[in-house]
Length: 194
Image (tube, rainbow, N blue to C red):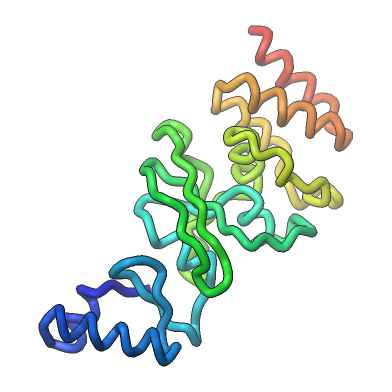
């Protein structure tokens, strides 16, 4: 990913020429345009890397993160990005859309930077919590729980509890119960009654 300003520095030219140069490169499909003033190399594009660098701070989450980890059977055409800032959706960047979800600062946790691809992405457990937080439960695929070792149930429990949001806690408790984690589900529902 690079900006118009980056191109001005590399080309050592005026903004107007750099803009024209980038426009021509986009037309020849040498580079792609994410949004005004932001570009990517078409030969090396990674939708998760592009999406996680449009807005700062932000991270890829929800069903997109689950797909990244191979924890869903869905193949999303949308990359969900969580940020403390607002941003309008970006349509059709190399065949996918980027949708931004604004979250409170105290909910901005549970993500890391992947060493490969320079991607900021939610932990699988935080991706599940974010799905409940934004009430996008239809995007949740039960296949994430097919192998118990794929999800850290204690971490999921902790993240759900940390939100303090009743709908998130109940949603995660129900999900845990449906997948045989009765003790953790009972603890979470007990947390609500406090």
